[in-house]
Length: 429
Image (cartoon, rainbow, N blue to C red; front, side, top):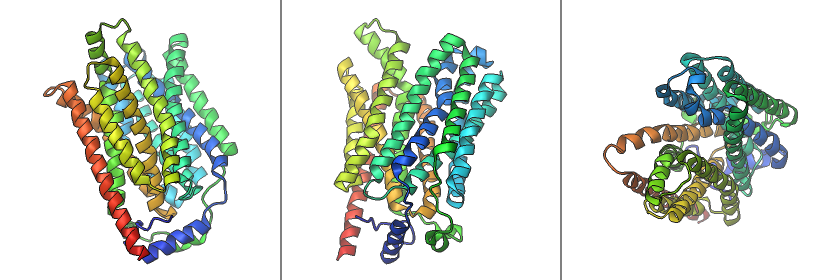
């Protein structure tokens, strides 16, 4: 079913015509032929970043920085992406995908090589800023490429499968990078990470087809001539808001306070498992659940023909999960962590999918850039907000606030769902 809540001007007849033209001009490239090189390249690009998050706090001296500087180094790439995601999207709207995506992978490999070859705060900061540039190109480009080759009927499933590669890469980088650091040392592990990312870029160079058609009718007729032609509507603002809420809670607050939660529970339960070990296991469990929930929720939204209904459900699941974290039972806390992880992966996939539903292909790069900027802003703001609030409220109180925020997101999703149904009914009549 075509969504007529489009992105330009609020004129249903024009939107319908544009979307019908878009479907007839969609690439004949099969999503399956794109997913493997695109997903594998994205996953392997995360080797250096995931390794650094895992080992830098305990190997700060080997990197030549103080422990106090670790937070700045790990956050720098997120903050720089607030300014890079939209330009990356504009670049993808105006250029062929391979010309941008493959260089972004190679820049990612260079950033990891900088971690390996240099010592000190400023070189490491430069490497992190370079990684921010690379990841904007990789993440915005990857989503744009998937949207190029999918349709309303299958977009959720394929977008979710691409998200799975992201979670797989994060888990692989954390596990393999930590093991390589223990066995070979910090610098050697980073060199290997840079080599793996480079191999991924070579594989993409060989196997990834170009998904943007040259001189298609859509390019000629729909390409915006000025900034004023690009007008996000209310629903799109709702989409990026929900993505920001999701990343603020799951990648920001919960990721930054998970060790505190584990420490509190170990103290309460007199467990013998170490804090770091159990925290690492829980991080891995969260990633695994998000990896599976992303494609499942996307496929469910395809089957039901209802993105917002599924979104409301997972937002409520996330709210329920955060409340469970306030209990004293380790088993119930584990259920809460699992619930929040399922919500995190699902919302990330569903919001990317909904962006593809709403936005014509000539605007998708900019739209995806805005979507990821909201997510990066949320994930960067989350830890800062969490530790500022912990000076005033308890950890349980912080999780309750996150639950309320998930609930507000569910209300927003319900409003958007109602608006969409009313518009569809009005057009049908």
